[in-house]
Structures are given as structure tokens and as C-alpha cells.
Image (cartoon, rainbow, N blue to C red; front, side):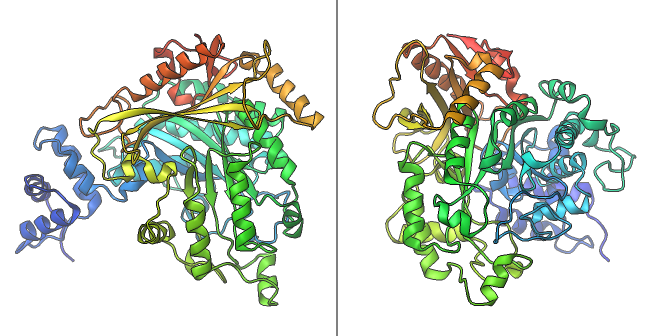
Length: 578
């Protein structure tokens, strides 16, 4: 067995690579082969190269090189959106739905299988939230990613159906991990790795989420901050009381399992909710300023490509809906699902092949600029799919297919500057798009290159109807005919009085490879003042429209940023008179 390479030899590889005219990952490995030729040592792996780079630059033994950093970074796309997404799963728990397409693996939360990457990590850690956060952050950093701005994504089926005490405890433990990460990532420690499943967390678990408020407050100034928190739930579980609880835990985005906009299909697949529930949930969530993400399931029983495309057009053409983000999950047949029995009997055949590709190309070409297609497939390993699409790089394949047809996708994901080849120092321009959604006017403010190929930053501004005058919304003004929806909206305003007659910033985001909270870099899109510029423009627009205050549904870890802009916390929101 070959011995480990000494630090000096690894540093020689980095020095040689950094002097290349065009630093690439292939070039780094070419330098490695050249330096290591004739030695008795094994080749250093990517993590070892990155750790040596960090150590050498900190000791001024090697010059900082953004190009070399990008070449060394493993799976660079993970933090190209400007944040470090950390996905954690809740423990297995009964689900209120009986959906025919969901797998029912007893040791997993409903709709998840143990071979999915995030699910496998959670299972190995016995669904411990503290361990899941800590281990994932450390893994990202070992692979060269900056993970101090955490976007926490909680999966596990219907979050709202879990006991409230468990939910509060789960969130607290996630924040405990983030707050204590500096201790967990100290180099040179002789202690056992606290992120290993056998190691106890540094802070003993508290009963029933005791100390949650303190944990959230501590994270406002922590080294590792949770700048956004997402949960997933069913539309029929969204009400004013649930929204109040979501704000208590610092939630800023909600993923809704919409699946289809046809009641007869929802009934056929035993989904257990209606289209009216989707409409009501969207209104209530946007009233409270949440970002809304839909899950959409083309190719399910009872549907055809034509019907799926009609539903997709309704999602963005009807002012009752218009989500901020969407996950398009083509329906597949999994073991341990009722749909597998249907497929075995010949009663259902999932959409696949050219028919599926044609449908997805049509869908992607019709997504408006304000929406982000977050995912195009679930992370099910192809070996675990009984019938249906098994192409794991479907997004890449669709991009190539659209280019061949002379089409392009305008969604945010495809236009993020970190996912394009646009020079980050190119001239930028300010754009505004206005549309109506769920009872309010939405203004989508962006900073893009002049050709609108790359988005550097954006802001979602919601202008609800002012109580002092009739709505100024034009065209498809939404007026709910459901008394229960109006009652729930009133309850939201009673719980959060600061939202009355306030313009709401529902999201502010700067794209580009994630940087440290205090880090700046000439070749990066982050930390160039784009966020401040968008906020100033949003405040100016809101003031001109007659609003006297602005409320921001801020992530816990970003509150300090808004304080610098003159905002203060009220009713869990960051608020400023304008």
C-alpha cells in the first residue's frame, strides 16, 4: 500500500497548477501526474488538495487563486446559487395522505426511499437533526465549498402533521448545530469527530424544543448562519395557525405538494386535497410573505401530455397560482407503492422516452422569468425505479435538446450567473416585471446583463391591497369567494399586525458562488452591493405606491444585514418605515 503524500509534495502540485495560464480540473490532475511521477507516494485526492490549499494560503506559503479554487472544488454547482443548501429529513411518521404513487418504506418518512442520497444520510444518522446539519456542512467544506450561509431544507413528507413539540425540537437542534459548527470544524483537534453517528452532540438535546428562541437569536450573529428555512407540506394543512407556527421557527419558504390542477385526478390518485386547497394555501402563504414552491407531477394516472401542458399553462396563466419556484417530478413507478400494483396489472404506464422529453421541453420553454425550476427529477436511483424515466441527468439532456431546437429556458435556475458563462464584471441593467398572484401585485426586480442571459440578483416585492383605498391591481384581480379564506387572512393579520398595509419583500437573493459572510472577490457576483441597490429601489417603489412601511420575511441569519439597512424586528419580520 502506497504511503500518504507529504504536505510539501501536495503543495508543489498546487503551485504548479496555479501558474498555469488556464487553470482547469484536468490541468490540476496533469500537474499531479507530473509532480508525482517516480515517487513512492499515492496521488492525493481532491479533499487533500483542498485542505492543503487552505493551509498553505493561510500561512502565506501559496497565493490565493480563485481559478484554482474553482478547479479544486468538487461538484461546484452545489453552491453556485450563492448559498449552501443543507437537506435534512425528519423521522418516519404517519402521513395523512394515501397517494398511490408514494412508496411506503417503513423505515423512511412517507414518499422517500432509503437509497436517495439525503435519505441515506439521515437514516445512517438515525434522523438526528444536529448530526445531519453538522455532517453535511463538514462534507461540503471538505470538498472546497463555502458553507457559512446555510439554506436549510427540511424534508420528510407532511411537516405540518408532525407533533408540534417534535417540530420545535427538530428546528432547535438544527440551529444548535449551526451555532456550534466553529467548534466542530476546528482543525487539529484530538477529540472524536462530533459528526460521527456514535458521537454525542456538544449540547444535550432539550425536551420539546425548549430554548428554541434563544437558539434562533444566537444564530443572528453566528459564524454559520441559517439564512433561509424551507419545509414541505400539503396544501390542505396550510392555515393561519400553521403560518404562525412556521414564523415561530424562522421558516421563509414552503413547498406545496400540488401535483395537478384537476380535482378528478387528485381523487383518482387518492391525494386527499383539492385544487381549492392549493388556491387557499397560496393566498395565505403569500399574504404572510412566504416564498411558495410547487411540486408538479406530469404523467400521473388519468393524465395525458396535452392535459399536463394545459395544467402547466394554468399554473402561470391564472392569477390564483403563479408559484415562485417549481419542482417538476415526472411520475415514476416505485416498489412498495400502490401504483406498482396498477402497473403490474397493466392499468398504468408512466410517461417516458420521447413523449416525456417533448412535454418537458414545452414546459421549460413556457416558464416565466420570475420562476425557478428547482428540480426536474427526484433523486431516486435508477435501479430503484420499476417503470418510468431513468435518465438521471435529465436537466442537462433537456438543455441540449432545447438548444438543438433553437429554444431556451428563461427560468431563474437556467439564468443564474453562476450557471452561465457570463463574465461577472459585465455591464448590468435593472429590470422590473409585474404580475398578479394570490390577491396581490407582485413586482419582480432583477439585476441582469443587458441581453438578459444572466441574473446577478433579484427581489420579490409584494404589494397587497391597501385598506385605505381600493385595489390598484389591474386585470385579473383576485377576490376570494371562500369565507374561510378571508377569515384565515384576517387571523394572519391579527397574529402579525405589522403586515397590515405593509409592502412585503418576500425574497432577496444574490447569485454566484457562495462566499463567506465577510468575503469579497473581484471575480464574484456576491457582495457587490446588488442587494442594497434592490432594497433601495423596492423601498422607493413602495413609497410611491402609498405604503408607509416595508416588511421583510428575513431568514434568521440575515437579520443583521437588514439591521444595517435600518430595519428592526417586529412580529418576526424585519420592518422599516419608508
